[in-house]
View (spheres, rainbow, N blue to C red):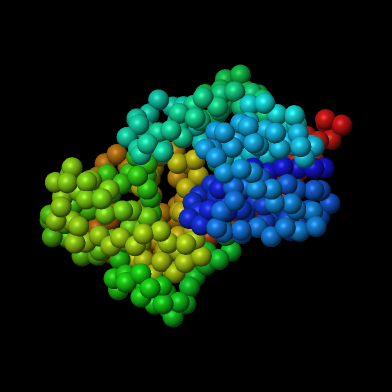
Length: 378
């Protein structure tokens, strides 16, 4: 088989969730499949993180705005490379294709009528493109993969014409480098980013679903009560965005308790997780919630949400909070600040969750789906 995989963003230096998931799929397919020919379609960028092999060809397509890259350049490439199948890994796909399509549909948040318009212009544009594209390509696809049972239910409830067997769950996994980290390596990374000796950790972005506003409201409550005895480390945020949010909340005095680091490469995150007293991930809506498992694999206690996929992923190994209640979040933050025994219990439970989610199993399932589609086609 000649299999194409859309991985447009994986060569960018600052990788995020979907980039890492696509990269792991490709790496694990390379390990288990030496027979089929793979064509990995990417943007040229500064981090060539996939090595060509005898059966793997890296195909840089012209750098251009994503809709043009996908709808024109990727569509033409499927015909040029005579593909038997194309797997698009990031929610959208070309509408016109000369081969069968497998689509990874991570989520349908942008179709749910929720107020995600408050994000950046880039996020709003992306949501608009997905709203235009996804309703068409889900019907065009031979198979739709999604990352949790929760999201599978959401997709089938929204697209009522889809047969259940067309939408399959392939869980994300945890990269092997997310594991306990030595004190020496923790200290090295702590010094590199000038982190406090002790801290809690929040990973997110400006997308409203990540609940930055709720986190800051909860922290401000504790700060005003004189109970916020741990600072918080917040990678990937700029000073301007944070200052604007704190001003809106009238919580400018909280700034002294927040440590900004800028982007932290994925390979350095385990040391940050391992060093943190606990990890905040009280998102409003997620299709999976990979950082929950990454933190647990590194021995970091987790606070996450009662909503969407997060209870499915966290199981009984995290404190679950109502993401719409800053009071509930503040109460649980204070509990973990003050109670090291609960932190230790969550840490031990957390180690048991990541082994339940495997990229190797996921890649085997995906390969079986490729083979089934191409067999039926022939």
